[in-house]
Image 1 (cartoon, rainbow, N blue to C red):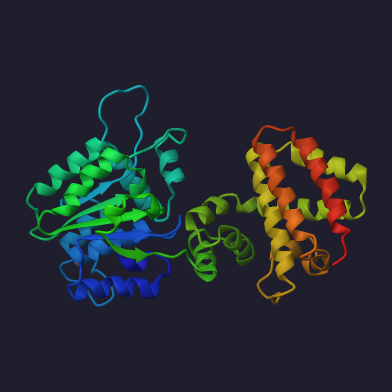
Image 2: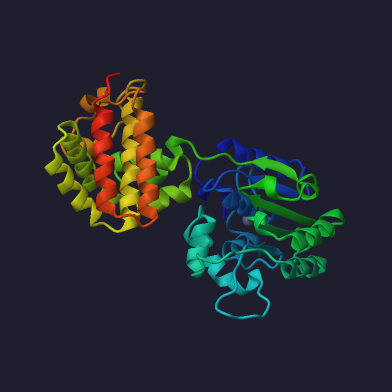
Length: 378
Ligand SMILES: [Zn+2]
């Protein structure tokens, strides 16, 4: 994987390249930051640059035999360790390498996937996935072998926070006396839960979330969204590209949501009980995931409406214009005096829906509260 395949992070990419160009590659590194920040992709691009036979000042060449092997994940000195779960009732030991073809497919398909996406791909999303002690023992064996290429051996550990205590302790021994020319890259979302004795041995590289513009451009270019829906999703995803992709899969429903939202707040304004109940019946027919998704869309719309007071309207929700709902006219009714209560009620409703409460009752209650909140004067 070349750096250029990864969205944004321009300065950071150059910083990583410079450490290699100036021979300052520390043998254990910790890439850390929030979910969906592209850290795993950056770790792979970093390894590829390090091993490339003909790198430029800005990226690996992508055409040498080493880059080609890296691209197909067949480079013999590149190893991955990631959380896995036993499938079925098997009692035999399992290793990351047992799931290597799933892993390759996942990384080739999506550079920004989350642990949930990974477990979903394995079909074990309801299981506790971890990195066990046997895995550390196997790592030790692999790294003691001579490097095939004569260059670095690279071990990328994704989500090391899923290591149990005995696995961590065994790994620590490896870090204390690393085999020659070995590079460990830990890619973590929660470095505070790693052993301090491990993190203190690592050079730390913080990978921030993506900016709004990076997320917006990504959604237009790679998910083929129009600018309007891409803006809504980019705000909801808040720099997490794994989340942005999940939301984008449901993007076609957004104009329906905009319609439902406008219908809803109009009936709340007039406190028209018949309309409200009709609306609750209509939304109550969706499956629970969809209701929760719609409620999070509503929260975002309220937050955006509040922000209109402080921001220009240029990058605002075009999808509402398509359903003839003027958010700029609605916005004055959303202010600091009622927004916290509105958002709290939406959260509670989403929670109740997730806990199997009757959707029609939850949504009717929510609407009656909303009718009160919207009448509060700024
Ligand atoms: Zn190359």
